Image (cartoon, rainbow over all chains, first blue to last red; front, side, top):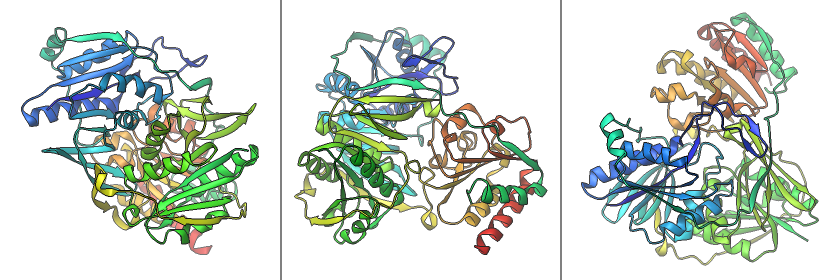
Length: 247
Length: 329
């Protein structure tokens, strides 16, 4: 069973962000594979292992530095990677078109995404690719199991869990759940250097959603320490009701 | 003239606060564009009764697609009906609540209509006749001001940010049976397992009680639950990444960059030191209260009110005082 996992290179979620024009200043910022995409890679590897055959290939749209992220995925155990070089903006549909153009001819029974990228948090490229390819899509999948021509997915919904069946080939977006990503072993890291990592120019689509400017989040005024220990509670409750109008 | 369409989400035949916020946001935007606010609600037979109330929130007209097979959400069925409705109208924008359903549905619609999608907006404006959307990125570490060069613009809005206003619009209801063929759907819901006693999702709650590593062990969550229950309906439990990673709490409760980004009216951070990725996820809350034994914890840097001390002594007293206040109302 062949699986393709789409990944994005993003700033580390622990990183401090310095705004620079309509983007961020990358100096001193560590870049990582978006955490949800790591869950998707893990899910892909386990799917292949359970099937006992097939390949896991990685696909990314980005600049040349994205090679590093793809190597990280190869070190986890993916078999091959393809980097589509091009600009990744905030217009998820433009990204989806570039990926879908490549995936059109894909024989992958499953195309996996992280449920969202940790930077733009648009949460849209997976279901957009599915729609463009006319494949069914289940989002926010915490775990799934392939059963013949279908996959049975558990997804997180408001106040509960939904069990959804989807016909293959399908697109799934993966959230935190059953797929704690494995660490790359030293052997895996060595092997990754010899695995195929191709690069080609993306078929770019025009971006119709643009960042006009970036601003700092609204500053929060300095708060007050109401007091120490349980004796401060009545005053806190009074402030919440009378001053903050929050209770 | 340019109308704005709001999508109203129903759950078990009821239309929630996040959808009323979408309707009011559509009404305000339509007002600026000299158009009117339209609503589409999709659900099972009998939904029109609940949808009719959306006139108060600003809907000039309300289309209700009723079908037995649409009683529960199905992405293919709902996308087909919504896309058909959007195509039949001349719209400047389509606004959906950024709920789990809205976030699943909106990208499908955007791809079907070949227009971009701005997700999880916290502001919508008209600048020189162009739509501009404000949206937190890097989980709130920065705000992006987006320009949209397509029509209609598809926008999902973060729950609890946009106010519901009393417009008292006409709210004229038209009910119809959409033409759908469920036998062609490739995604089928087999089962829904609800959470205990209708627990509210943390992303939609108006009050959140979040616990961190300072809670020491999962069996101590009863203390947070007592406070949550004293706060009444609309309150939900949240958690820091550390306690979710430790397996103490489910991921659905996680607040922060790898969890949910929230904007409640009132946020309690209990035993949470305030890692940068947690702060990113909750800093747009209206009022933040921190309880922590470490007076130097970063959480106090964003909190409006703080109490320094032993949370195991403070929490029971807090639950008691809140319960007393609420029962006196």
